[in-house]
Image (cartoon, rainbow, N blue to C red; front, side):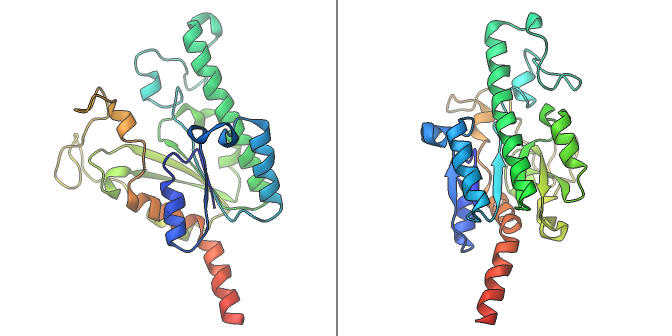
Length: 243
């Protein structure tokens, strides 16, 4: 299982616990794992075509596509998901938009390949991400082999709600039911009866609250791994039974 933009590799670890080997790609590991690099994309594509990949998780960095990246200085809109005109942005903002676009374009290119190969894949981003407003992802979402799930992370034992959207390809909907849990609370109160932690400002340790919420909770990793490896685990089971 390929865990792309995987950070600490939580989904990959959950896959290994389920008996499926995994590998993590994240730019923090070094240039060889930078998915915007053509050489990295070429190597991953070769693995996929050779049948060495059984599923793909893409936890795309939020950057300027997510609500946090647009809160103070909006750089994208629903009608301009690839970014506002350069004349409306500072040089720093232009660079941030450019880097975000490079990352999303790399992810879309890989997803299109995985989809053609009928490989199971999941793309995760904030529910209100402008990435889902791009023509490329809208077209993908309308494919008969693609479906969507929306979840609240508090249902997976976090103190924040953090509504999240998953675009899912080549996985049966019954295998992704655990990925559609949403909070039944309202007015900032969680289904647990506690008030949701707001992901804004600084944490007591000095870091940003959004940075502290980037890693998936373990139960969400388990649900993602279950969906991504369902076909591979079924194939293993059938092989054992027929041996």
